[in-house]
Amino acid sequence: MGSLTHLAAALLFGLLIVKPSAVMQRLSATVAAEVDIFGNMEAIQASTVMNLLAEQYTPQCLRAVIMPEEDASSNKLTQYFLVHAKDFVEAERLLLDQRLRKEQYIVAIIPQKNQNSSYWRVIIRQLLHPSGSPKVLSVNKWSSVTGLANTNDIFPDQMADFCGIKLVGSGLYYRPYVDYEVVEGSRVVVPKPSIDINTLDAVAYKLNFTYDIVMPADGEWGVLKDDGHWTGIMGDVEFGRANFSLGLVMMQERANSLDPTMMYFMEALTFITAKSPPRAPWQNLITPFQLKVWVCVVVSVCGGVLNYHVFYHIQATISTSRLLESHAFMRILASFLSQSLYGYLWHAAGRVYLGFWFLYAFLVTTHYKTSLTSNLAVPFIPPPLDTLQQLLGSNLKYGLDENKGSRHQLFSTSRLLLYHRMWRNMQFYSDDNSMRMVVEGTYSYINYRSFLMIQMLRHNSNPKRKTDLHVATEEFFPTGSVWFLPKGAPYMKNFNAVMWRCVEDGLINKWLYDLYAVYVKEYEDQMSSQEQQDTAIETDTRLVVFTLNHLQGAFFLFSLGHGCGLLLLSLELLLAPHTSST
Image 1: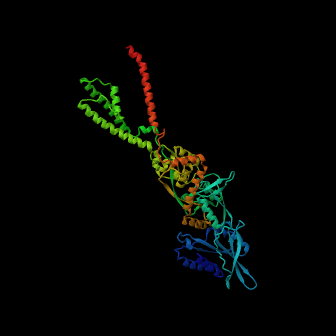
Image 2: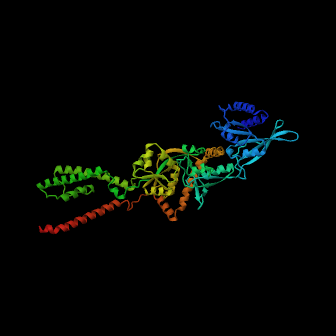
């Protein structure tokens, strides 16, 4: 870039004594030949802004268009302007014109004479000045005899040093990207360590500026309105209320209105739900077998009672007493409880039947007891939801945050059938309300993975153990995090250079891991001493000790038996007088 810059300067100053048409002709041929090294370049006509300026000024304007080496891969062109003004007043008025505020490389030259010779005075402007407003500076002299008087750069990088001025960034609270403390009664917030704030600190240090972070007045990320303008953070940058945004993701609709920086962090959307709770303890009595198995067992018991009664009845016709149906039931049931029978059948058919019945009862009870034991020791937990299809087919409600942003834009405008179906039932709540409903097990919150991981840490009752919340494994709408700057912002290149160093040096990932540790520590500090003690006791427990909760089903069964017994006793007492009278 330096060689081309000096080439342009030398050509322009060396040809000032030539007629303007010859200057432009020779300049175009020489510069085009030099730029062929970097690729093809088409002839570029005078810019619109210079045409507008021509209505009020009458300087001779020579323009060179150069492709710097560092921008060759992105095929971006940088414009260099040299303006011939008649006096300092005209040069100052031109250089400070607001319509040129986004042009970095513009120089004015003024003819000067003294007693012995004539020369050209070189005037540049400093866009960023400690006073807060642009200033015009005289940096060099040129004559046909001595050339340039010094080696000062006449096309300096205007954005390399912001001279301590204050910029304004617009952002919303969104851990781990943007974190701050709200100041009551003010949109200006107090920033706290987070990915975007740490990156901004590095950019501000390198480029020498300070900053304020403000919340958008409408509290929104930004959606495109029907009139083509934006709300929220995007609107703050679009209408000049902020110099840059924080915590936004790349979307083509946004890039059409504002200029995005490089992507410094890649991420995708997913959703968070409460893990399915274990089944009620009393259900452990019936869950070892499926419903079909229970039906088969009940039918087999009924058949066993009938067969046992028949066999005993046949035997009774020969030599023994008869067997009541209730006794037959109790004896068959006893075989499932490893109880011996009295009053065995003595003929061969009955003994063969009982032998196979005992074997059947042994196998059924063994399977039941082993399954029951495992259920009591390790309760069964239904698998969590991991895909949008599973979420759509569940009975959970789902939704997005109420601050309209990229997620709102995706589901509301997407033509994908799944997104369209979900949008019809989408709900919108604040982060706190959304997570409260997630913890209650009635809601699923859709957001970016890193943000949901922070929310999971925040709502986890014990950060040292497995959380009761689950972040789905499926990811969708992958995108990158960027900052948005006004269209044509001259400091875009400088911001990108520092941000790229942060990414290249691995600082973004390091900050993310460090922030996770900070958030865990922060939540632990919020726990009371008794909660921490209970956590330590639970964490050190290595043996599974059965509690009343584990044996809930047994006590329910015990109560059910007593209830049935009392009911039958009451019926017998009611029917006893009638039976005796008959």
